[in-house]
Image (cartoon, rainbow, N blue to C red; front, side, top):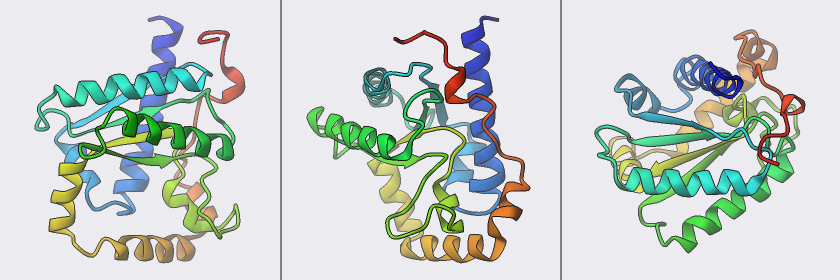
Length: 197
């Protein structure tokens, strides 16, 4: 197996561990378990350090979902382990990703959620436990079908309570207990080679 293939496998394994132990295990998202157990999540990895390559992959994944039966693939996670390690840079990438969705005229089909190791909600301190709800092992763009989100909201209309519940859970749990889950990124930004330059 090539080094790039190994890297991709490691990133996917780390992300799946976070999904199963934190997102699903702690009940942070009531909709995640169904697509996980049905194997309807596509995991896509960009090993480049260039933001333009991440955006190009996002565009390819949008087209792929457009031509894939939702029963086979509902959603896609795009992980970029070597790109935008700083959260402010990641925010800028997210804005460009949203512009891409607008430019492709697919806002009625797809929307984005975003996760980052240094995720920080506006108005919080960097070490506030509530930020852990969006702290994935790697910078991650989550591409969702609007139709799937609408169906989920019909089943769980009080979506605002999810954030409130998660905030209370993680504040009571604390960072130390969360970190005891052992979720970590085995690939770090400084390990990137010259690929993608």
